[in-house]
Image (cartoon, rainbow, N blue to C red):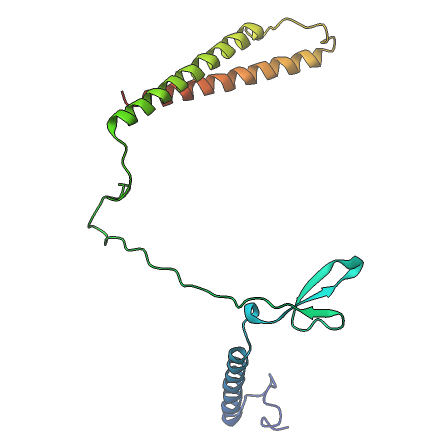
Length: 187
């Protein structure tokens, strides 16, 4: 057997003519594929048909769906390219994180009143959180809460004790967070 007869044989080297022929065949295949893709309409532009599906549920299909399908007359899809955002080059203009010049500003009196309202709300939340925390600590009784009538089973008592401990931990974290928020407010 000659190498020209079986150019894809892994046991024999391929002849130079055969290699050139395979390369040109691959190029022709790529060209044909490119022409096929360019001549075919995009999926958004293809015809859409509505067909009666099982149990009377309508099905929508691309291309002719076959018997019992009707072509839908839809408007052509229009696309508009997005515009570019004109921003100053790096190093010029405003600092990163700064508001642009056209950004609406709030006068200082309005901002102070908003800050005062925020402070009042945070202080009220802190007071209610501290009141809940005091009630939880009183009920927890340093890890020895009083047993309730429905806690004949000792495991129920232990579960309630663990829940109280978790609630106290969560309340302390909430109070610390509120204090931190208050300290971050401008005076």
